[in-house]
Length: 225
Image (cartoon, rainbow, N blue to C red):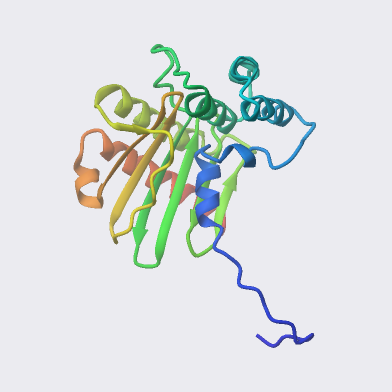
């Protein structure tokens, strides 16, 4: 592209890796939030971070529990609070809530790149393509509620029924065409499964997640028209 001022153009990095971590509530401690913020619950995260860095674990725990127990927050805040509790404070959630599903993210490696869709327990949703473009659904109405709920319920059934692998850090996206990665965010961590589209679609537990997330993606993409 012609540069009017003859300055060397800087190469911009693909934001996809950072965005997928934000979407599944798996952002590093120093980025949730970046710097100081006075708005709730960001101010609590910033205060807890100071205690974590100072090794004041008991004080950090008190603040993270304030966040976890606060009603009506965006699910990603709960995901992040539990991630920091597990990773830095070595505190695991009690069994009765450990598999509560906050969000489900499904990524498909297509010939044009990775297509991602995520559903949240508060009926919000996101879609994103690795080459750019996507939809942010902040639930301005109830038109996608059923589609979002179907993904969340399928995720709940999977984590309660089969021994999926659970990790603290979101796995890398699928690296082969027609492979699918499913990530289910809970207080215990991110339950995940990876396989071909055919294999997962035919699985009794992964299949409903693949199908419902595809229907949600269609609903989100239709909003662009």
